[in-house]
Image (tube, rainbow, N blue to C red; front, side, top):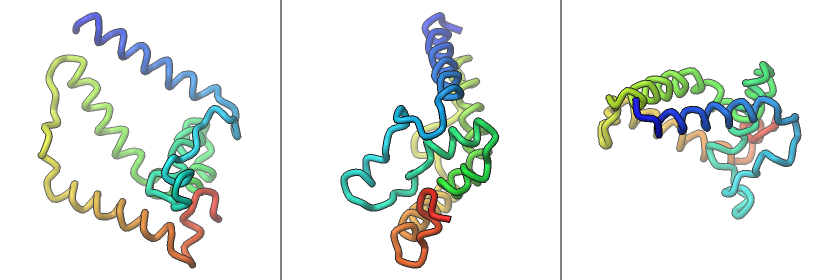
Length: 130
């Protein structure tokens, strides 16, 4: 493994470690830019706070902030971990344009979730909505 990759991995680990010590409700967590400028809730609204809550073991708060994100977190972590290991050893697994039918279904689910979050009657899907 090249030394530059070690630096990137160490910095990424530092960012994760730093996020573990950020207090709940801290102003260090940025607001969603889509919500900030449009007032709509995108599919990712609340995912930063949900991830932070999950990292602290508060899965109920995480689920309240972004339920789809919490449900998909194990899959995302598995795929991300696989890619990091492959990247570190110069053997990338993912190739652009190779999403397949599962990627289309997942993308459709995320878009549908984003639309539902903004329809009256589905306020419980908004960050902290229930």
